[in-house]
Amino acid sequence: MKTIVLNAPYELRFTETKAPADITDPNQALVKVQAVGICGTDLHAYKGEQSFMSYPRILGHELGVEVVAVGENAKHFGITVGDRCAVIPYLHCGKCIACRRGKTNCCTQMQVLGVHVDGGMREWLTVPLSALREANDLPYEYLAQVEMLAIGAHAVRRAHPLAGENALVIGAGPIGLGVVSFLQETGARVLIQEINSHRLDFCRRHEIAEVIDGNDEVPAQLQSLLDGDMPTMVFDATGSAVSMMNAINYVSHGGSLVYVGHIKGELTFSDPELHKRELALYRSRNATQDDFTQVLVAIEQNRVRPDTWITHRASFDNLVDEFPSWLDMQSGIIKAILQVEQDGTGVTVNAD
Image (cartoon, rainbow, N blue to C red; front, side, top):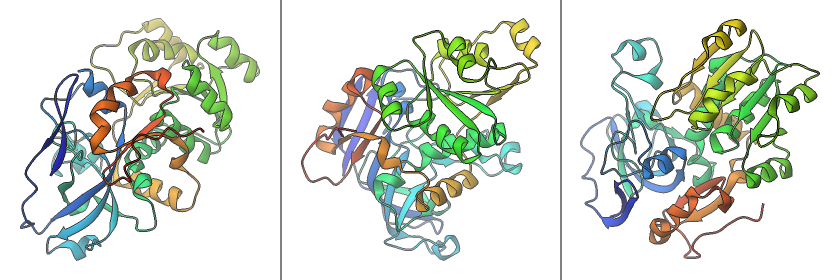
């Protein structure tokens, strides 16, 4: 079967690998991968900057799939052959202290598809039936973005924002946009900060939220919009050490800071700045089954439209050539999708 493997940093290769065997495990399913979302994790892995990555690795954890075979327990999971599904790519143990407390997103033995174990940049994949979420009315490209959106939904749920609260999201990439979407559902007032000119223009053009230009004096812009105050809640979705360490300066006294991304390295802070604010610091990792359910309902009810964010598409035949260009933020990339079955038109860049 067609497969794309990251052999080592900057060594992405198209190859053929053996297709999965027939399903013998009653709790497994064989799926045909129809669409794969490309996210910051994949880009960081390509550069050797992903904290949990080992090589070689088949990337791909944002998946829209078609079920082609199921184990005998499929009826217990509500999954049948032919279903369109999103995939929860976090393979958890179910036994550790985190899992026992319902925090399967941070299992002590976590195995994430495309990170710890091989993922979905291939034609077929075997996954647990419990990892599938049926959504037959949604396009595969939408399903390939559910995991990304679930990360944003989980980060918002971690922070417990209140209606009318002033919230700043730093980073207008796909994760940041997902955070914005679910913050707005809480009734919070949302501002989004970005330094890339293309993403700033994207946010303004689509009226994503109130826009803060990170290239200018950020505190002054915030205070101007918020009647002299700073945001009571700040979400950093950049995966940048500089941004993450600087984000503390944008949080109001008594406020909260939520790190949605992570870096391969250390963060350092001024303790007096933390102390004087009595700052609440949250880390947000992955998402839970409840977050996936919330996202699917939001998409089905047309409250979230992930197609708006797709700017680049590629097929198996041209992904290896196109992938390096997506590292360049001047390319205008917001969200890229690997289309496993495509009409041969190659990469498409949306005007919007």
